[in-house]
Length: 422
Image (cartoon, rainbow, N blue to C red):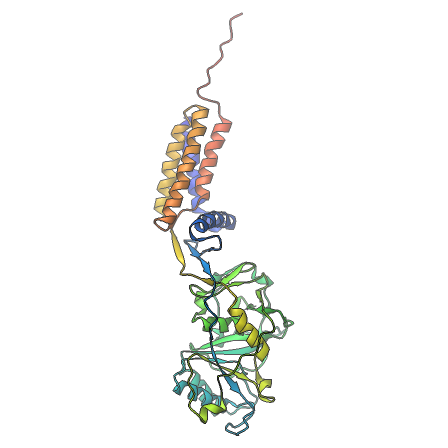
């Protein structure tokens, strides 16, 4: 009877813990901590471990220093146009349409617009020409200022290609800046080619020594201009991001591992030399220019720089900060065992522990300790050799029931004391 009860209790607790594991965050954290310690023994102490959004796999990322500093972009300066090549200074929508067309002719497939893509009373035909040129590129990065307004609006469709899924975020999103409106009228059309990031949060004070990486718009995660700039620099997409507030923001293999605080910020390295232009926008129409990296438009003229979405100094500091982060190596995925395999392990364990419950207390305790050691080696083998992993908390819960049965029941080997007859 004792063995049967031990089997039933061990089985029920083990299966129940396995069944409801996905709903209990504390169990996720316990198992992730244990798995992290084992992974670090294999990949190094700096390795990162993350649960995927479905809690079925553990993703391990080993870190390494970045290679020699490289140039991520070719800076194309938007000047005050001394030769009067363009229609206006700062350039109009039609001016930018011709600049974009020229850059596309020279082989650019990705483009970063560090200047404002918004105008007052711009003719519709010119805006149409600009949006048509944007669609010729694989990706165009632009910035737009956001704010929090008493009369908020639903998130515009222009953010569809740059929005980050909430499944990719761990942490309290209520601590992030909250926005609900554009600070300037939008004149760009929604497009899969357009990656939009916020250049400014008018309801938040701009920090001189931090980059605000993300903000929330009615439950949607919006990246900053600087974060999208990092994505473009390492050829990543919003789907590649994995954000753990208070710890790290990762972008996958061969991309930076960025420290991020609980408010969605990362420190900014300050006072770096200004990025030197490769060419200027007006020079594109005068001479042949060779571009080997994605062009980044930034204004440096006395008049034109008023249209910058990001200052020249902040751009230089951001590009330098990118180089300081360690990069992730090719991720290693540890797939969770199928549910039937976990159930078989729990059943076998419950049978073994129930059989041992009929032995002496010393034998029972010693055997359980040996089984725990064997289970530990089994889990290590699954992870290191087969790249599988098994949540440990259901097994620990099963062992806990076994130890409670030892503590709450009498030793079956104890002999009954017979009192002498009086």
